[in-house]
Structure formats: C-alpha cells, structure tokens
Amino acid sequence: MTANRRQNFRPEEDEDAPLVERTLGGDQQAYEQLVRKHEQRVFRTAIAILGELADAEEAMQEAFLKAYQNLPTFRRDARFTTWLTRIAVNESLQILRRRRDAASLDDLEAPLQDLRPSRVEEWYANPERRYATAELKRIVEEAIRALPPAYRVVFLLRDVEELSTEETAEALGLSIPATKSRVLRARLMVREALAAHFEKPPTLRSRLRRATSMVRNMMAMAFERPAGRLGGR
Amino acid sequence: MLTCQEVLDNLSCYLDGEGSEELRRELERHIARCARCFVVVDTTKQTLRIVADCEPFEVPLATSALLYDRLAHFFAGLL
Image (cartoon, rainbow over all chains, first blue to last red):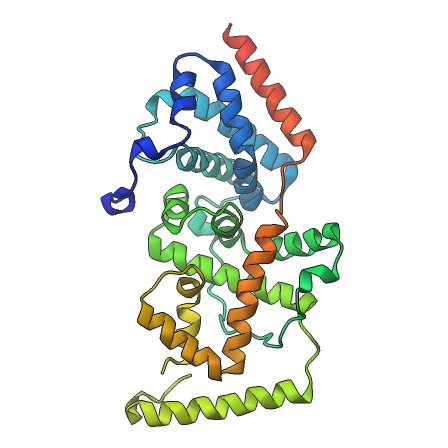
C-alpha cells in the first residue's frame, strides 16, 4: 500500500461512490445494486483461487456479507471494487486454508517455469471462428484452469476483468513488479495452451522462414552490437 | 537491436501500450525480421482478444440465486 500506488486515484472518480453512500445511509437496495454490478468480478476472483464451484459460491457469499458489514471502515483511498476484490481474495484464501496449508497467494506460487515459447507456428486467421461459441469458451476456460492459482487470479483480474496493473496489484496485495511478472507468465502460458488448438501445422516454408530470420537476426546483432554483448539470444 | 529475450521481457509492456516510443520502435524492428518473435507477439495479442471476447467463468445463474437468497436472509435478520 505504498503512496505511489494510489497517487492517481481520486475518490470522486469512483463511480460506485453514490451507491456506497446510500448503503451506508441504510439503503439495502443500493447494496443489492452493488452486488449485481460486481458479482461477476467477485466470482472470477473466487473461482480463480479455489477452482471448485461450491467453494467459490461460499467465498462469494462471505465476501459480500463481509463487505456490507465492514463498509463503514472503507476508507475511500481506493475504488470500492478494488477494496471488494481484496475482501474476495481474503475470503477465498481462508477457505483454501481450511482445505490445505496454503496461507497466502505466495504459497500458491508455482516454481518459475521456462518462459521461452515452445509453440511458434502461425495461427489460422481468426482462429476463434473455427469453433462454436460454447466449444471456444471451454477451450479458453481449460487453458486458464491449467494455470497455477496465483497466475490464474492475476490473469482473470488483469485480462478478463481488465483491471489496470496497479489495481490488480492492490487487490491482490502484490508489488507492481510481481504483478507484472505474473501477468506476463500467465499470458504466455495461456497463449501456449491456445496454440495447441489454433496453430497451423508446420510447413517446410515456415521452418525455413524461421531459420532465415534467425540468421538475419544474428547478423544484425553482430553488426550493431559490441562483440561483448553477443551472448544469449 | 533487441534480443529475443528482451522482446519477451517487454511483451506485456508492448501489448498494454506502455513503454517509450523508442522501445516500441525497437520491438517492431525486431519482430519485422524475427519470424519467431513475430508469431509470439502476434499470437499473444490474439490470445488476449479471444479470452476477453469469450467472457470465461461467467457466474452461473444458480450461483447468483444462492447469493441473493443468502443476502435476503441476512437483511431479514437485521430487521
């Protein structure tokens, strides 16, 4: 919760502020509106951490009850949704703790995997059109499900809920560099999983093109860089 | 010229439209001549588009119903 993480946030920018105020004034319908508006994000957070529907349902209910009860302590130094997402993360982690020994998102961290992409064939044009909507959704959800939970939650918040890097970091209690690193890894892992469905079969031409560009690359570096910096690609 | 590893390290930055003009130019210069990085950058971009468009993990209706029931009970208890 460093100051610079919040320096760009002004409370009047929070579009939920009026509903929050009405809820604090005792208007339960205002809170129901907040619930309807944000249930999707809370659900994605919970399912990302917990994996099981029944657990995610429990976490979601607890999160919305806790948020209501603790609303008077909401300090408005972040968006309501960021604060709510943080509660959803904590409720999910508590349920996870009951199930096993993982205590924080860091315990869910998978060992750093090799980032180098292994599937590098081009994809079909508009590859998503090759599948029916439901089938495509299944493929995408499977790819996300296969991520380690610590990456799954970062990916869903950043790339599905479209939070900014700063908001994702804040909601998860992570540093910005840790968030960025997880976002990158998650994106590459999902890309790799989708490639299995979307890439064209390799051709002699595509292999040749890669070999040619590798040589061109090395030549370019040999001419542009001091010799000492040639190591590693 | 950037290395392939540097392209990978700055991939998110590039896709999120962050980073300096110079970095973007360097990156584009690299992928214009590196078939491998071109594919990685292009397909990661496609990945993000496809994922966002298909709205994965939507709340099931029954899950919503359970939540509203629970809240209704809670509010009734407050009366």
